[in-house]
Image (cartoon, rainbow, N blue to C red; front, side):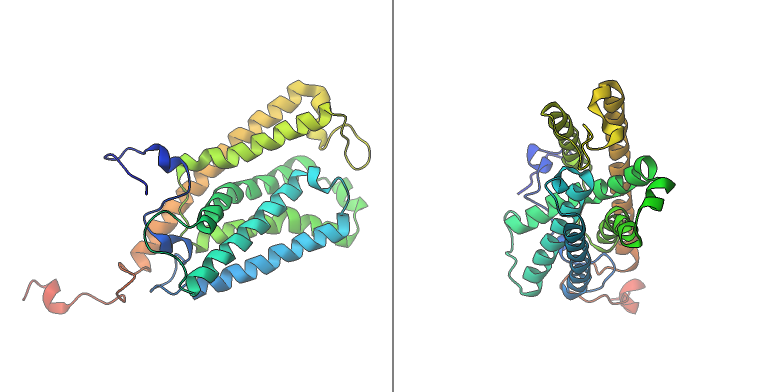
Length: 273
């Protein structure tokens, strides 16, 4: 379990093995009571969407180069997030979540994927539409290719954002190293891939032109700016999660999972026993 000394965090807070309430991982922020069904239905829909987009991407562009692109890393992350969240909700509906102790491995896996994916997915969307997309690219695409681009660089962020807004999953600032680590891991992968003589699908000696390691100075600046932007984005999502919890607690949630939300007793409220 996570132990605290006053208001200070211990090293165990840096990982995803303990949380005060297990229900945070399977209830929505916008419900009364303790039914796991509402979030199960939401996650079932999100899982169907992400699996559909993943299959569409694989059918349309399957090649030995598919895994070198950050977009497809993000697609795999979002799909893994929705499937792991669905697994947690299924266990919750089946009353198979244990009481007390550390979080089950599948809850920790979901929480780790959540911490990484919600900011990385939105970051991928921003990088694509700001740095990579151009009217010339759209003119060369078929309608199917354009809508696949929209799905992989737009719907992915929508799925992540819906999970943030509707769930109660905590987003702790101390976990910022998790999405940042994935981002830096991809940057190192792209550099190693270049040094090993790797090319993109049409033979260019880079994966993305803006991350061309032949111009290492410019590539380094892009990585640094992206890392700083990811930190700011994660901070904004952290603040959004705090606002979500405070607002939903104030307006919607019950104070206890074992009691229904009821108005205060008239005599108690006036101090009469």
